[in-house]
Image (tube, rainbow, N blue to C red; front, side, top):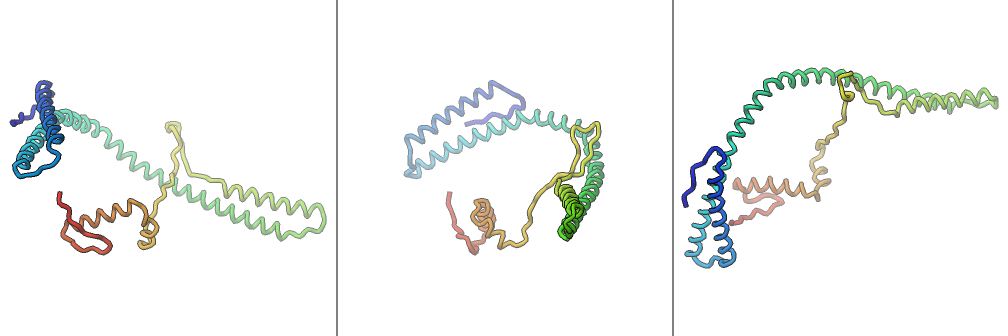
Length: 232
């Protein structure tokens, strides 16, 4: 079965003809599926191989046409990207450089906030200890002095426990720029880490992928794995 040369632009007549061929091939495929559930001899196998060749040729022709038809749009898209990239790239670089500078300032500001928080914690602890050591002599004044120490300690404790995040906001910003927390983990003990996630399906999938790559490279023995060959 002959296949058409790729046409770079949309061609409805060509697509209609290719659709007709595809429908005919699918109809033939359905007859193979329904009438030949098993291949029992070389003659039938040879005929099926020839038909598979027709399917593959038609699929290749359709893919070639799809790529050819899509290419002008991709080219136009690349030209648009290049035009706007010339404008946006300097702006992006300027933003990156100056944002790093602003983040450095916010990190320093956050450090001062953390230092103030730790100092408030220390003051609260000192005031509570002082209140606990305060001797009551039965006078109203001694009771008030202890209560005042406890109140001051409570204020310092509240100041230390109130979360604060360094930020800055100008009239041109829709919202304040602030530091964000990004949590991550790194492996400190590989054996303990594998034990933690030993039942996670992603671990088995990753190990299988690594071992299969070794098997395809010629490794035939691998501790913890069964290396097998599958014909398909």
